[in-house]
Image (cartoon, rainbow, N blue to C red):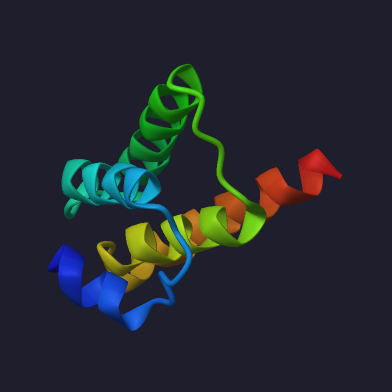
Length: 92
């Protein structure tokens, strides 16, 4: 899926160009693949952002996940959503 198409469909108003660059890098790394690859891409970009002092709000993280989910097949998307829900429950 084309990065620009996905982000034009999402509300990216108010997100800094620096953060959008991380989102674009993550989307490019994960093009296609499966739920496991998606989570690895998310962790990699999150670690890189953290090292550079960039943090994301909950809504920005949710948007990143939605972008990544767009690149998965319906079956893999379902697996990824299950993993995400499990991780969110563990954080509480």
